[in-house]
Image (cartoon, rainbow, N blue to C red; front, side):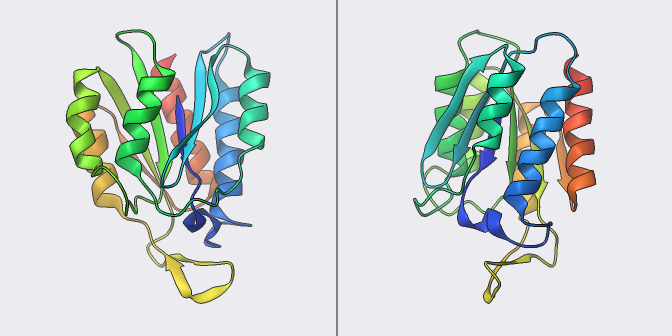
Length: 187
């Protein structure tokens, strides 16, 4: 399952035209990189989690859901809640579940992401994390006072402690490489 940050910080302009559009483009490439019929679901999150597409083997359905992602109006970024909620709603099998989390790592609401690790490990969910953002950060909606920077520590810990891998993506090419590496490890 793919879990994408849909909070306002994803409008930061350190990617062209912004983080959310770069994430959508890379996620579509990820879906296209699978041969055969992969089973993929999609959720986005802010202060709450939104299931955009339940697990499906239809590449067209999942790509349509990805293209339809927009920034949600609900404030906050609840990474811990999003991982737990999406794993409960998207995964029906006991083992072999993989969550790909794409975010800038700035969790400021709800369950601490590190507290969610125990739950994910109990459910045998492997988490690959992709950090989107640059160390300098990007302005949100052109506002020089609103800058969003990448918080890698949390994302590295989530990946490491669930058996996944962390990827830092400073541009769209890095994003596509991260998704490609994850796809190769799952085929």
